[in-house]
Length: 486
Image (cartoon, rainbow, N blue to C red; front, side, top):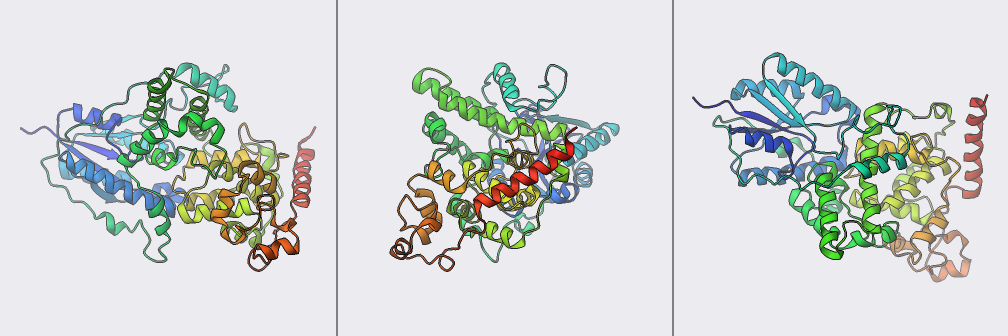
């Protein structure tokens, strides 16, 4: 008698190496039915955005090839996960479902529901941690409450976490003997046909586990050592660019931690240099964001600090459109927004600058920016996106003080001093000297003419006066503070 197969349900764990659910399923010694379920209904408003869906298509293509090389077919199904799993259990005679956990609120509720239902029918249901170093609930403060200050969270995680050698990818995957119907990935239309804005994404990215591992090795043996000094310079390729690979689970945080520390041992004989320590703390920020999302599931929709529910946000359709299109008249802001639209990614320092500009210069609700990033970022991640926008807005955990209002001109001059980044993404002002590249409105008529610029025509004048906008933002913040004061 042939042993019943196990359904291996892929989610945001689209890799073979260091995949605990896959490792456990293959160790079982029975056939596997690998499946990816596109479940937009449970995700609701947080279904993957346009750029993320583009990436997902490529990631699934890569995973499908990898499984085929090892003897198994990745099954594609579209619909509510409960219904699809029920269909597969009936079709295959499987007696077990294995998967790796997700931590978005909707996914936590869905997966708990599924696990209870499966076990009530005597179907083995096992889930694993593939996406975090430490799961939510395992790191709490001295009073048993979740950490709301990153420094304390990071200290605890850094002291307790030990790098572990990642699990190897299986050399072969035993497929179920039962033939299973699969939908065609192309029929899901995850990638747009017209207008084909995905040209820029194709030029910038290669989704998939193999590409993720190459990028990690390249970073670990190169820019990681100088990460502390170079991470804030958008004109330098000084960051890992692993966020999308990490979000889709093409690579996991254990693999990243292991690789950068082991590479440091090979290069300099010590596991952690200042640059690598700083990089590891950025990995921990992602962990911190997931812990926040787990303990405060309304994080994507509601301010964590209650007083911000009364903040007097403005409706500013003209300003929002200028921000989205990269036409605000502030070069570092416009460069970032154009980079985002063209490549689905933006340098982290610039993300903070453009977010501060939207929230504080334009007084537009942070949730508007959060949704724009959700649709346009290839690395759109519910926990990181929500926590980061709340951080900038001053309404979240360990948030930047609201009165810290980034000056776009000064930020540009400090972190892109020679205008390398701005000149690439805002070429219409490229002929301005370094001293004016971030503040073209300060240029004289002669200087503008020499650079071939007509403000308000070839490049916009600033949509706001930053000094006045800053005062307006501080007045609004003071108003909500006054209403909450005893």
